Image 1 (tube, rainbow, N blue to C red):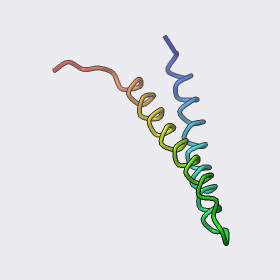
Image 2 (image 1 turned 90 degrees about the vertical axis):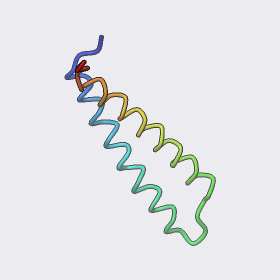
Image 3 (image 1 turned 180 degrees about the horizontal axis):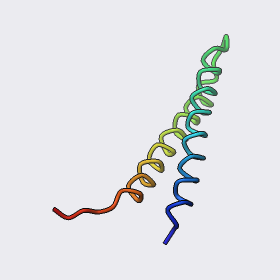
Length: 66
């Protein structure tokens, strides 16, 4: 099982990459002729990162059976 500290470190890295993708997508939209294919790829990557963030956050929250 992965250590909680390792999860938090990885979560921080993923969140940083997610923010960086926002900036990259915005920059591509700022071009005179935006590269639609590249934008689509970055958006897909961003969605995968969002899913990964959710999975890691779920690992940090303990399962409580009510």
